[in-house]
Length: 113
Image (cartoon, rainbow, N blue to C red; front, side, top):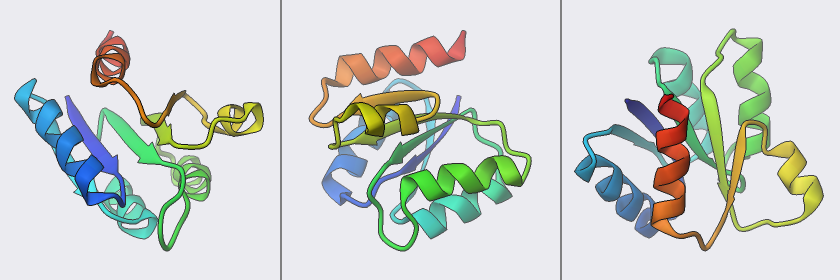
């Protein structure tokens, strides 16, 4: 499974990518929304793990621009925001920071089915 991780917090991105790579996922990291959008438009991913609050282009705007380019990649929103309105905007799935790694990994495994 090839995953695009769009996360501006280097510590979180490094920990997540290490945990995912340890489980044989292929992971590419983008540190801002613009870079994430360009990677998503250029390459094919099975899943995008996306922070909501990002520099240059926020996660919601990035999500809105993907379908307009024909992209149907599943998105797992990863964010510190936890209101019902925020969850509704989260599209495919929504994980609130701080999160348990096993919960995130379970949600990723469920996406493979």
